[in-house]
Length: 157
Image (cartoon, rainbow, N blue to C red):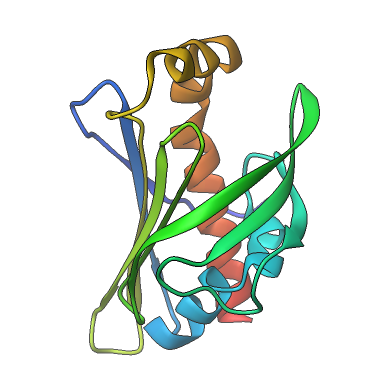
């Protein structure tokens, strides 16, 4: 078993979680994976992302893409890219209005620091019920850390 771990960050906000890892790869190589919705299931640490159903080959600001998911039951979710800064940041959200973000910082030595965050601080009341029902806020930090370790493994290969 690998001893590579991502750092779970303290956000001090009840509806935000984050994790961070250093990856021995360029921001461009990592961003190419993050901006390809068909690759998301390869590094998903939650086991909920099954595959991309629709969307462009490469995401861009305003792009819409749908994913096949499973959290207790199978479903599909449409996401919209709400932040896109090439090789630095990509974020998307969906109907429930929570946002997944990846921020990349070039450390200048062939290493990139990647921070994944989940922000549900501005969601509708009915979405809060879903987060509680699924236990997402308790699970997300661990799942994000697992995702980052998988992203590291793929990016460094």
